[in-house]
Amino acid sequence: MSLKEKIERFKYPINGFVIAWQEEPNFRFHNIWAVLTLLGAYFLDVTYVEFLIIIMMIGLVIVAELLNTALEELCDKFQPTHDPHVAKIKDLAAAAVFASAITAVLVGLAIFIPRIINVFAV
Image (cartoon, rainbow, N blue to C red; front, side, top):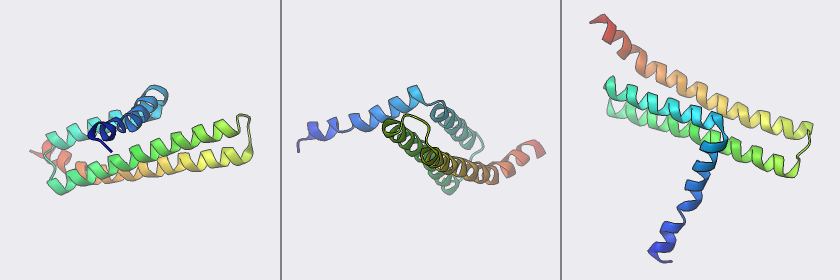
């Protein structure tokens, strides 16, 4: 496989990100919060390890959101009308995103709250 072919393969995941950004408000929401969190990490001078943990939590939430979106699309393709089993699948996938987001918030609070307290305590 040539380098050009390898580079061309990046168009598929990039296209997935573009689709998610254009069509999924929750994807945009999570990405905006990711940027704000990274800015907060920068200004609050988190440690290298804390920064890596923040990156991992952001990745977890974004991946969960992308998988949820893909699963919803798949369900809608094969069952366009309401079906209780499809509704259950979609609810479970949404719960996975919610669980990852709550986990990320809790980790973020554990990292940021002591720093925010220090900023105002000075």
